[in-house]
View 1 (cartoon, rainbow, N blue to C red):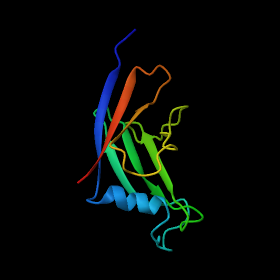
View 2 (view 1 turned 45 degrees about the vertical axis):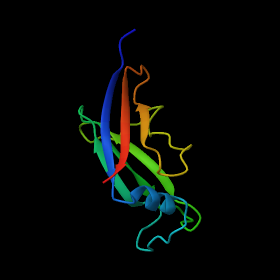
View 3 (view 1 turned 90 degrees about the vertical axis):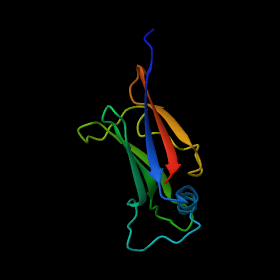
Length: 121
């Protein structure tokens, strides 16, 4: 069995971002009416050495005072959105932005893993 290649990248949120983004996600702070439903309220990016780009943040829901949507999208080195059985990255078990990292795969063979570290900067 071939050895797995692990790529690592860091997504930097603003200082205090983990708590602030969690509050946006959980609907405890007001979201501007200038932001429309399904648009990002906050967004950060991280690029892996092989060119894979991840964007993560909070999108406005139809009921932003109750909750908003935590989402992570993945793009290939050419900027094309990756869609697979494993992508978008499943963050359904994450009820906040307090996680230190997310480990995910893109392809079914799972010979490459991606470790996304989430830090405040």
